[in-house]
Every structure is written in structure tokens, then in C-alpha cells.
Image (cartoon, rainbow, N blue to C red):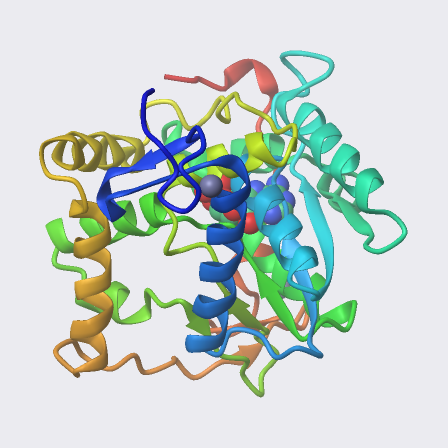
Length: 321
Ligand code: AMP
Ligand code: ZN
Ligand code: ZN
């Protein structure tokens, strides 16, 4: 593209307008790793001796994250939740295709790191698609069921497998889109909870961190490519038309007009929060679910157990708008 690497004047592989920085392959890799390490340290995400569990989806962000953490010397294993999405429409299915990328990466780093795979259908008898069908409502119910299942199972597995921290691949575009949704709806309580680090609780919530939240989605795609990490490019079939994708589009169009918009939006928010300009997050009082023992704000069964206990409706009557 004609840009030269700022460090060595070699051919650049990426020009990051928001940082006024073009870099060649080697210097880009070095830049990502250095900034990830600083970000992790600055926000006290991980201690050098922590055993980390990386939630991997088979996408560019979580696989890059796993690779970066291993390169930085962390003891990091992966976990893939097989949600069983798409199985009844297409034999290989979106979830199985994503799993293959996670497995392929795991094989490339074996035996240094291992991949745990949790198959929802094998454990609970139904895939997330089938679980979501038990309820009423539109297509969005798949996304909320999927989010709930992932949160519950990732927390449970991190604790049961004895890891100190759960790391997810949320990037800056993801975080800015969530922030935009929360801002448009004046969800100040959600904003208070939107954090880079969620601490562990005595009731069994594990510590959760987002080490990639300072990187643009585009930077992570470039990183996966230059590191030669194959990843799933298709989006989840249920994400089509999701509100968060609309917010991402708006933010990208603002970014095109004024580079650095996303970075500023999100980082000024974090600063405002630090200054106390937003209400403090008060964690709700948690009890343990009567059935699964996971922490929950409700009495009796947790939201996950209520969801999976719902009887499934026959496939034929389901409508996908
Ligand atoms: P998403 O909610 O799909 O935007 O994903 C956000 C993060 O959640 C990813 O970067 C992963 O760290 C994690 N994640 C998403 N899907 C899965 C999955 N099926 N199994 C494990 N982790 C996942
Ligand atoms: Zn260079
Ligand atoms: Zn439960």
C-alpha cells in the first residue's frame, strides 16, 4: 500500500491510522505483544504464575489471544463450548466447523497447552438451538440463550478445572459496540459493570479478563493472518441483524471520518469510570443455585437451570424470522 514500516522502513503489512503507525510483519507482531503485555500488567489482569483458561470460539480474536498469552509465557489452556448451533440444518454445523479451528490451533501448540471441549448436547441432552426453542419469542432468543449458556458453563468449567482466571477475546470493537448500546439506552448500571476485569467472588464467580480490549478488530484479524493462524471467517448464523452489528457499522463509519473515534469513546469511558463519574458497580448478593450450585441472583434455580428445564417445543412449530 506504499506505507513503510516506521521502525525499519521495510514494507508495511498494516497501517493503523488511529495510531498514525504503519508496521512491517515482524514489528507489528512485536507491537501487539508488547502492548498486550503492558495492558495486562497495567490492569492487573494476570499474574505471571496464574493458570489461565482462554475461552476460544474458533474466531480470530480468541485464537490470537491464546497465541499471544502463550508467546508472553503464560500457562494458558483453551476451552471451546460446543453449542451445537446449526446441527439440524446442516450436518457439519457452524459449531463443529468452529471447533475444527480451535482443535487445529491446539494441535499446533501441543503439548505446551491443551484444549478442553464441552459439548452442551452431550451434557444436557439438547443443543443451544434446541434449548432456546423451549421458549417463546423471536430470533434474538437464540442469542440470549447462547450468551447465558456460555457465561454459566465458562464460569463453572474455569472453577471446576482449577484455573485462576478466564480470559475472553473481546476486542475494542466489541466493547465500543456494547458501550454504545448502553449509552443509547442510558443503562448506567450495565455501564458500571462493563469492565476489563471482573473479580472473583466468594460465592464462586471466577475472575474474568479481556486482554484484547485495546486492539481494533482489524488489528486482531491482521495478527491472526501474519501469525498464520487459520480461523473461522463466517459469522454465527443467528448473529445476522444483531443490534450489536448495527452499532459496529455506525462506529466504523464514524471511524472512517475520524480515526481514533472507537479508541477515544471506549478509553474516555474507562477514565470517567475511574474518576467516579459513573455509579459504582455494586455486585448483587449472590446465592448458590439449588440445582447446579453456580452463583445466582435469584432464589431457587439459576437462570441457566430454568432455561434448560423448559420443555422443548417440537421442531416443526419453530419460526425463524
Ligand atoms: P462473542 O460473544 O461471540 O462475541 O464472543 C466473545 C468471546 O467469548 C470470544 O472472544 C471468546 O473468548 C468467547 N467465546 C465465544 N464463543 C465461544 C465458545 N463457543 N466457546 C468458548 N468461548 C467462546
Ligand atoms: Zn519493521
Ligand atoms: Zn443452576
